[in-house]
Amino acid sequence: MTIKAILQAKGDAVTAIARTATVAEAVALLAQHRIGAVPVLDGEDVAGIFSERDVIHALAEHGASALERAVGDVMTAPAITVTRDEAALGALSLMTRRRIRHLPVVEEGRMIGLISIGDLVKYRIDRIEADAEAMRTYIQAS
Image (cartoon, rainbow, N blue to C red; front, side, top):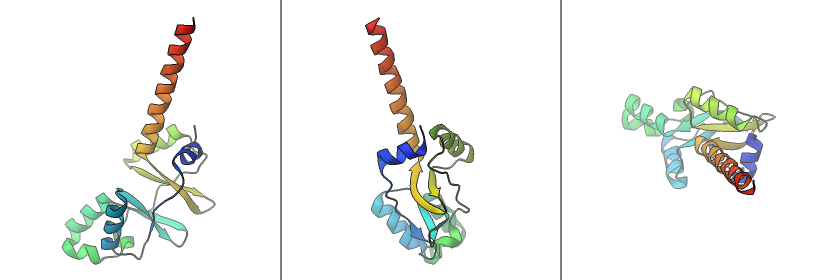
């Protein structure tokens, strides 16, 4: 299965933020949507990812004034991205190796979606359950 199939199942709506937005605005966006990370855009280009981890690091380094800083100053960059043709297991492996939880999906220089490690784990569980059901059906039919 490819990233394209996962995006088709979950939809391609993505919440994003501009690199010029403040950390306080980004934190409000994360809270409003109950998400852990948001892609940071510079025009249509994915400039980075802003996550809960970035908030913690910014607060530790700058104190409360971190909330007034631009997201572009504290985001994780460059963003690691995938295309819709990437295999789901390849993306899961990439996330595990790089210790990241979100991957923007990029085509022709623009973001078309975002997948999380939760999306990929759900895919794996669904796949394992389908395989198990197929085996049960095969055994019962024999």
